[in-house]
Image (cartoon, rainbow, N blue to C red; front, side, top):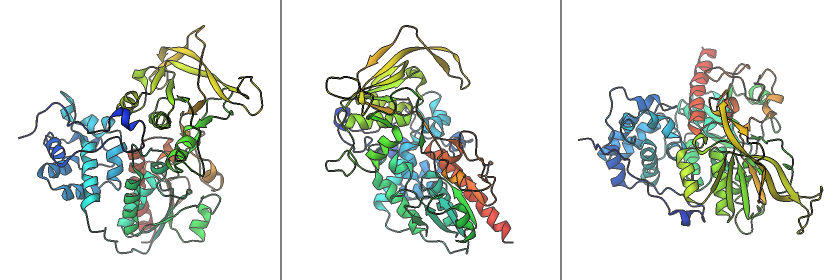
Length: 472
């Protein structure tokens, strides 16, 4: 009999006043008993709407059925038919807007906890599986993948399983892209990312780090000199955006990209770090998305009082509901309907402002109110007259989104981009350059891990078809 409870099994977590002082994973994961009980809430619907809501089309009811039976390895096998990074997706995907958002159990209660079950299955496999993946027989063809984030790793995995010799080129010294530099340890432990990448290497994928395509070598060299028959660009969107207000060049102003990279990749918060980061007393994070939540929660763990400054209201926050709730529980202060107009600086302890060598000492803001909807469908924030005030902070983090780096475009003839920098690609990932495909944030701008994976999966199928037809 199905479990007709209207509520999910709660996810065990660290207590807020404990976790906001450490970088250990917040969510502790289901036990075997919790996972099996949650799995029995699935009705195995005839139309399976949850599958339609998954960008990589995991056959969700089938893997959940195996969890209910206690056959976790079979559940993992089913997930792996569609997803290359199940332990990652189970943690960071916005399931509430995708698979769980389509779950019929959500009509009269809470949906089945699909993401939590995926995480459980992947963690169980990683802890218990003894056999490594079998390296497929080579088909004699080579493909290059630029970027080792979720779209690049997915594309590489799918092609490797078809027998292609895949080489992934990564600009940083560690593979993983945004999974290692952008998402904090307390949401996604880096040991999990390393485990997933080791699985790709077992399939025969080569990963070359410290290679900046466009500087170290070019796409032309990859194709004309190194013999790669196709190239997939999954270089992400790492170019930060700023507001263009006075004071953004002061010491103590970071882009969220820099701040999170220093925390997550360089471990700059540790004593004796080669690249230490300032331990501010009061931090303002400007923005309301998941990246803003990540930056704010990292700053809190460094001991600061932290404000989220967002020009719309709580209802309009684009971040995942779970991330907002965790931030509130951890003591982050939300100053919504607030917009910065200037970042203030000082040169000495007397707070005398000096145009040279100035450090953040505050931020001028105005209160906002919501007017008519804008092009995005959200109500447009309008400044409230006479509402100016100063926020006492000594660090400001701008979490306003990112755009693709123009380096690859500027060094690759025939590769066209949108005005805002995204690479132009069709529904299969094909760019305006023959044999060159692209996907993920490099095409769409900053989006989710699972959407990037979906793009990598689609491009891998198109690359396979392109090379097969070319060699008939």
